[in-house]
Image (tube, rainbow, N blue to C red; front, side, top):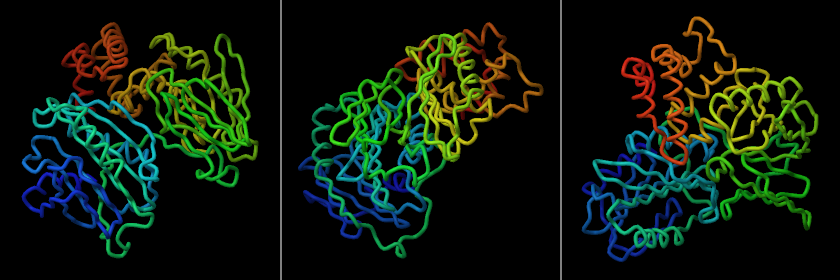
Length: 451
């Protein structure tokens, strides 16, 4: 994908320009209308990936008023949530610079196929813009549709044209060149460890196929439509649950952060409620067939103790309870107010790291390595209330933060951390202010880590 979009920058001079109302690629089985009558298409193919730029006939790519359609064959299992994370970390963050921020990210359906929808903002060559991107999975084919909105151009009128193209996009069910004719390149970059994807809580034999349940975003809620015997667990508040006609509809309202369909579990869950001190722990248990990590008393105690310590160290969050979800996932994954227990949940440090994502990734939302890696890793030290020696034994992110804390001193580090928490709520993460408050010397290890 990186190679394909980089190629787009030279297409204007190196490819044929088509002044047609509708572009169709018969080999890929893809058809799309142009947004406006004075726009043209510029297609090109390299290493089995086809890129089609569409823009005003009299415009230039440097105007940042253009769209792109990219069609490529994916090697291996195509997981859209992971692809989206890699695009954000490996492509959009470097391209859009320091002002980069993710405005929206959700699972949707495009032309009858599953898709991830993202909206980002930032600066390219001194031009401030928003970029909207759809990543669509059609079997082994990955199809990306990108729209650019430069500041200074009326957004509503541009959005109307882009919506016309999106509505008119047609994807034939079995499109794409024959596999043998597509060179095996590396169309996507891998720049960061992927965050979790939606997947069953138990092995396939214990759950129904994804075609028998759906998840959508409706009026600011994540909505699941499932067979009556199934339940879904997602970050947020379970605001309603309705069973009728052998179907179960569950609605989750986000309490921290926005709607997000990249992390949830579906299974034959049985809910259970525990009280640990002042904390309500909601357990979502699956049938005890030995395949899932059980929420044992020791895991519940560790989670409750960690939660209370973070609450004191990082501040209160608007959540009344903590959800622990039993799954057969290989790795434990955390989200705002929820912990999906994987095979590694017996490791106390894993539980502490993933629970920290309620604050780092939930309250403070960012895909950068400070929030997504370093702070969750370092937070385990807050619970332990001591630092193992030597520091080199710590994970890389925690190691850099601990070196910065030692250099800056506790008081200055706490001030920087408090500023990061306060100024980054519902706003782009205040990384620059955090580093500035640490001081030049203390920030050196982190600056190298964040590059």
